[in-house]
Each structure stands twice: as C-alpha cells, then as structure tokens.
Length: 305
Image 1 (cartoon, rainbow, N blue to C red):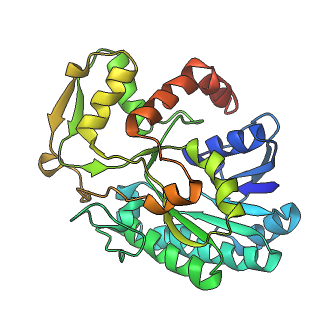
Image 2 (image 1 turned 180 degrees about the vertical axis):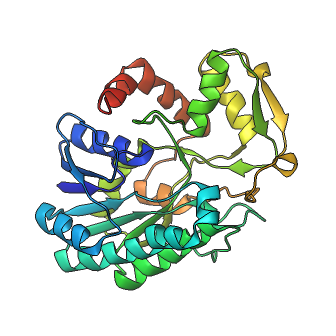
C-alpha cells in the first residue's frame, strides 16, 4: 500500500511513517518546515495551506491511503490566531478530502478529544461536539468538512502520547524528563483522559481500512486516568519514585485558555472492529518504555539530525 502521511515531522506523523515502513508499506511523509530523513521513507516538503502545492503533491504521490495528521495544536496560539487556525485545522482537511475523493484514495483524518467540553466524559461517537476553545472548534469544523466532502472518510478522535522526532516534548516525555532529573512533577487531579500510545495506530489502520469503516471512530485506552494518575503510572513503569508526582489542579493553574476537565472517550466500537480488548494505560506505558529500550527513540531522533 502507498501511504501518504501529513505532519511527518510531528509526533504522530513521524511514528506512523516509521511503523508503516516497518510493516512493508511505501511511505511518503510530508513536512512544511522541519526536514528529516527516516530510512526507507520518502520525505516531501509542502505547505498544505497552498491549494496548488497540495494538488501537485497528491497528484505526484497518488497514494492509496492518506493519513492527515498535520494540525496547529498549540491552544494558546490557536486562540490568538483564529483565522490561521481555521485555515490549517478546518479548511485544509476539507480540501484534502476533495482531492482524496478524486484520486480514489482512502482518507483517515486525525481529530481529537478536544472537540468536547469535558463536562461529562465517557463520550461516544454520536455525542455532538461542544468545544471550549478555538482549537477544539477548528477540529470540530474539520470533522464536518471532511465527512461532507468525502462520506467514505474515516475520522479518528484520540489523545496521544509518544516519542518525538523533533526536540520538543509530549506530555509523557515532559513527565519523564522531570523524573530523570529527580524533580517534582505536577499532575492535574481534575483532568481525566484516556491516552493512547501513538504507535498503536499504525497496526490498527490497515485493519480499519479492510473493514471499510467510515465516519467517526474513537481510539482510546480501555481505561481512563487523571493526569496525576497517568504521571504516577509512568513513574512506576520507568522505575522512578511515584512520590515525585504531586497533585495539582487545572482550576488553580494560570493557563490562558480553558482546559476541558473530563474528555475520556469510549472506544467500544473500536474494540469490536479489532476483535480484541484495547490496551490499558499501563500497557501503553510499558510499550512506550519498550520503544525506548529497544533503540527506537535513538533511530527516530537521528532522522531529524
């Protein structure tokens, strides 16, 4: 299968590119600014916000499957740059859907649990989006645009962690970095989510394509945790003292953009499609450590050099 992954220098895109290549697929990973060199993966520069560039890219690559990971994800930036946020996060996915439909390519659009306000948690696919901020609004609009232009597309809502190719840190990497320095870690006790290791997706996507699944699907761990509990579990898995993790509250934080409190997703449909239980948070963290211990992170980060 020829797979094109946008956001190829980002956390999810880079990990998917590596995992798809390992599985024997022909992979093109797209980036805008940060060039990289993953062995066996073709890297292509493209500003997706320029329609002509986007059309040339897809016309040349002619992928069987497009996985659209690229997005503006910094909540504060999105809030202060609403027009740019809307262009990147909502309009571009709709344009990709139009082109994918013309090419006859499968389209998987990556969305987020941030389309919900976190008032209840336990969200299912049919629950209507109710975002708290500009980032969430733009992603909810993207879902609607993609499925309007291409009803056969698959929209995956999730909250991921993993190893970064670039010198920046995901939540899990930030926690681990503090623990390695024997520094205290503040974990929100009042923010609950169902995080998933990014690498899980690569193994599931071909199976989801084989089933012909379309529409919205939630991808999540089978359990949920507060960010405080997540940090403690990470400490235990990596052999650090969980007492380094201190309880804190998002309600008492100085964050400029409000955070949803309870966005954990129910992923019963995914478990049914896959025909097996979904990984627990601890199992995901164990796999996260195994990637580091096997040298995966060294290989990944060498690609950015």
